[in-house]
Every structure is written in C-alpha cells, then in structure tokens.
Length: 247
Image (cartoon, rainbow, N blue to C red; front, top):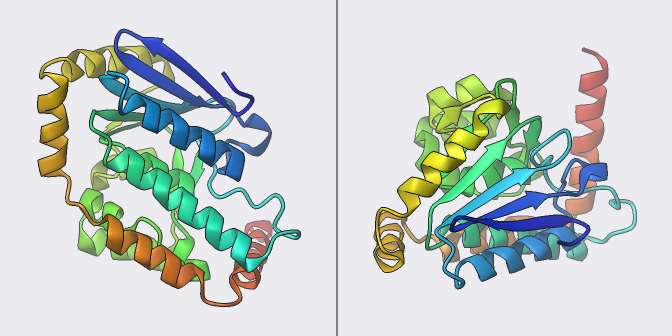
C-alpha cells in the first residue's frame, strides 16, 4: 500500500484502488507512476483480472491541475505523455481489466475508464472528455473503438457531459450497476478470467486489440507540445468555471 494507491490480491485478481481522495483521485505524477508500476507488476505476476476503482467521491476526476500555476509547458507535456503511457499499458494488458466508476469521471479519468476491457459505472456517474477544448488529442482512437466514429466526434467536439445510462447506450460503459452490486460483477469477472489459460488469454487480447500505440503517442506529443499549453488549459478551466457559475 502507498499513500496514493491501495493494492490487494484476491482469488487471482489484483485490485488497484486509487486513494488520492483529497484530489478526487486526479492523475498527478505520483499517482500515475504508482499505477504504471501496479499495471506492470500485474502483467507479469500471474494476475488473471486487473480491477481499477477509486476511494472517495469519484473514481478519477482527471488530470491533476492543482499545481498549474507553478508548472511549465514542458512539465505538462511530460505528464501527459506519462498518462498516455499508463493508458496504453492498461489497454494492452495481457488480461481482462475491469473499471468500477462512480462520481465525476472527467478527462484522463474517463480515458482510464475507457481503456479497460470491462467498464461498470454506478448510476449517476458522469463523464466528460474535454481534451480537445485545450488542443490535445488523448485517447481518441480508444474512444472510437468503444463508441464508433460518429459518437467519438460528437463527444470530443462538444465536450458534453454524459451520464452512466447514456455511456451504456453508447458502448462507453459495459454495465450500469449500483455499488452494492459491484461484488457480484467482480465475482463474475474473476470467474470468466479463469476460463482460458493465461497464455491463451494474453493471445486473445493481443489479436483482438488493435495496436495504435505509436500513433497515439505521436498525437499526444505533437498536440501537447504546441507552445502555450499552460495558457490554453488555464483559459479552458476559467471558461468552464465561469459557465458552471451561470447555471
């Protein structure tokens, strides 16, 4: 266990709980690196199911901007590249991955949810993917796989917030289940994860998940490195806060 991450083992499952509750589990450097280590370990230690969930009020509220005033454009680019590295590790994991989401799941948090092979949301969970609002391309191909080209464009063009039930209709979520029922979902996923041998499972994911890692990394590096990233994020955040204040 670390301050930001809780890792437990249960019947072949590795349960990874985001525990940065003071920031609604926003993805800052410490949490991202801890998650990368956890996914790497699970990929080599015989884990049959990798489960991601969050403590506190939200699964993951997105990119941690708590120190935005102090960081440089270069710092932000590096952090986004590490987040993309994490998302790729989850998406290409050699075993089933299950996300259990609740609360406000925005930005990189929604991307983390999207990267998992099974995606359960509690009723009332809300999602938003605003990255293109400040000019970055993060996870768009993975989103297209889940919801199709037209809906991926709609979600990213509008920056809309959508609830769990719409996420299910779109294919962004694979189920909507009350948190009281999550144990049953985990049990079913654990049982299914033992159907094939680990080698056969890894082969199944390898041949059914299209590998666009190089293109995805190139997109985030290219779009995030355009000068003025910090200013764009600041302007976007200020506009979003102003709009929220009018509601």
